[in-house]
Image (cartoon, rainbow, N blue to C red):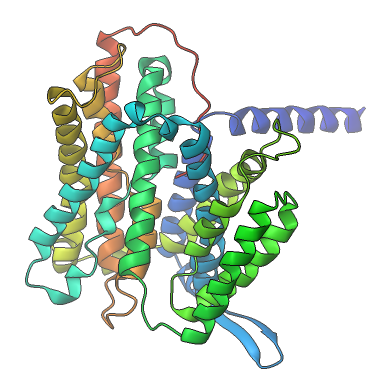
Length: 415
């Protein structure tokens, strides 16, 4: 009897967990929980163990070849390469068959995305002008965290029109393209020619595999691992290997047009990326010891520039460029949207968290100056304020308008 009761309780618990994980807001909530846990541990006596964990050396060696990195760097360079692979798959699907395949549908979110990158960068540079060690973080406030933003939007339920979710997803995808280009162009240094040649050789191999309609995914992954190691050793940031690999995965199997290797891989990785990789990344990077906070740190140009870039720059850039696109008749608002909705969404775009933390980890690693504390404070406070303001505005706008019921689109679980 007791065993049956335990089994019943466990079945109920599993059912509740499965129900929670299927919610659009689940990824954002788990990301928040991982961040909160890191902050709690970093401000208790457990802090010493937290630092020992992320600084722990992990080595993979074969003969004279070895990769020797701290656990934090394995997470940032390794796990995040899988995240970028997932982003690359989503980009390819959207460009080939999704929201980005029709130029008319992307003008409005593209305008918002461009403004949402230019204005925050301009504000950050204005705040840090003259501080050479601080200016290298210029790209930090240019990013949007789609997992958090969509999670917050999902909490509003039917108050948010379905077309606003599509607008946010498309904007964030274009934002990701911008972040990938920025990392490739501005955060690559100390090039090692031999490793770069090995990486370059992988490209024609992948091209031939694609052209011959090879849909054997493990073969692509094997070449992808070689590409990742080569890029890691070359000085080009290793996470870009994920995007490059995704570009060569076949969109369709020529022998079975109903099967899409890209979509299959993307869906297979959704849960791993949303519920494991991103929370682990957040946990490893968000641990801030608040005992170090002082007035100099709060008002340091890096902290202030990131905060103003995310809170002021994002909303101003996304909203202003979207408004201009409509007024210049380059784009039109969907029937169920108003500029109030766009403004609320623009505020949510100030939640930069995951990608901002990642770019922040790259921004100051070669400067010799430790700005990790300053940039993390700016990212966390800026993202929190943007999230609260965005939620409040969309809540108030939703309470005054009742858009037609539209079936929610399938939202990819990606930051």
